[in-house]
Length: 148
Image 1 (tube, one colour):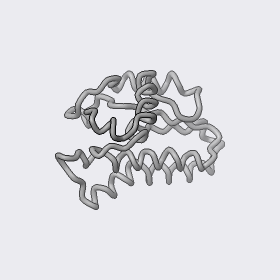
Image 2 (cartoon, helix red, strand yellow; image 1 turned 120 degrees about the horizontal axis):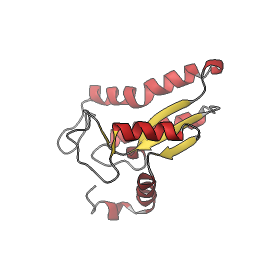
Image 3 (cartoon, rainbow, N blue to C red; image 1 turned 120 degrees about the vertical axis):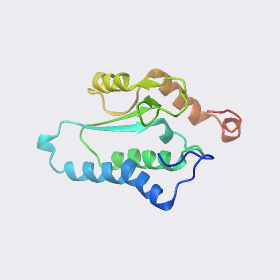
Image 4 (cartoon, rainbow, N blue to C red; image 1 turned 180 degrees about the vertical axis):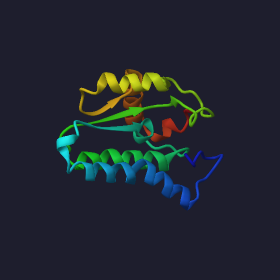
């Protein structure tokens, strides 16, 4: 992720790469693969808590994760799962803060496997669902005073 305000502001090229990785490429692949439903049992999309409510720190990333979720819903897929995670500990996230409900890569993988029978939008764990509800109902002026 190229953005991490106030530490780093992304260039136009970096914004385009964020869009391609988090929206354009998965959407294009799904849209085109959807034409061959005989060989596809389920589409699984990895999303992020950043899609719930964008923050100044990573609003471009969150914007494209949210856009993917919204556009996947418009494709009328027969069988799909969107799973929202918070931080998953990987090499890519090793220098990021560790918020509540952080998951290891193994735990995230197990969550996907455990929930493959479900459809629609779900969360990696119940804690993330509760945080999501909180983020949706709390006004912006209150959130600005909370460091997340």
